[in-house]
Length: 334
Image (cartoon, rainbow, N blue to C red):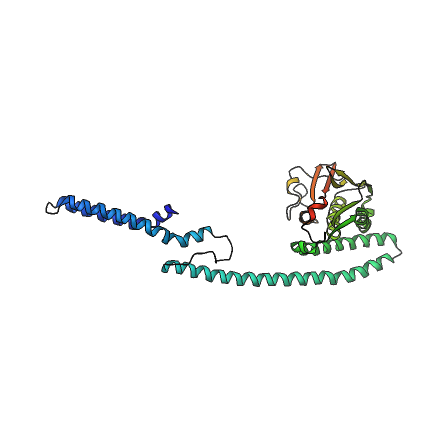
């Protein structure tokens, strides 16, 4: 701040020094003016000027120091009271801008919340005819047509489900209830929901559960597993998907492994990024790049670590490492 202060006052300091040098120069060329006396006066003036700068430094930099040290937000309470007219101009400008930004932010937030509520309401409204449609499909006699229609119904259902959770995930902390869950009660309903898709692609499941219980939130854990299963089914053909649970280093691990096309090594660090789709199959228009991103966001809130291993043309393995029970002490519901 001292350097900035001197740079800001450089023109005044330069003017003062030039003035003093001019006085000495006039005394030097004019023999009637005593040079030594003027030199003494200039020396005293220089000392007084330095003392003046030292005194003025804290007063003139106090306001700007508070600006420099304040947090990057819309709270101006930490700014020092302005003493000079120019400081008051800066303070008034910041206050006016802050008030305007707060107003715009509140308006945008209100509109986003309204849009979110309307979308959630629409999704719930659409689910009613979808449920009725599913019941009508179940009563169909033509098995081939029934399978095809169920597959298309499932695609719509999964897209709506993804939209629903995408809108809920920013407030996921308010929607968690941690309890002791049986893995079979979470995994089997998801497999049953995806049955028509698996039949359509000729995919089966091999389930090996050594550990049967975990502590988590049933709704969000179901969503995470659903995303991993749909990802496995999407990129697999006529081969079984293996689901197994076991204990490792005192923590429960759930592994979902497929034998599909695999993920390129250069894509692995980015698969959980929002909107990222495979660089090797970029023409896949059906991929939104949101499924794994949302699953990872939900997992972070549940203290679940998602890891992935994959080889091209050999398959992909996702592992969910669950936290120990005492790691949930700060989550509502335990």
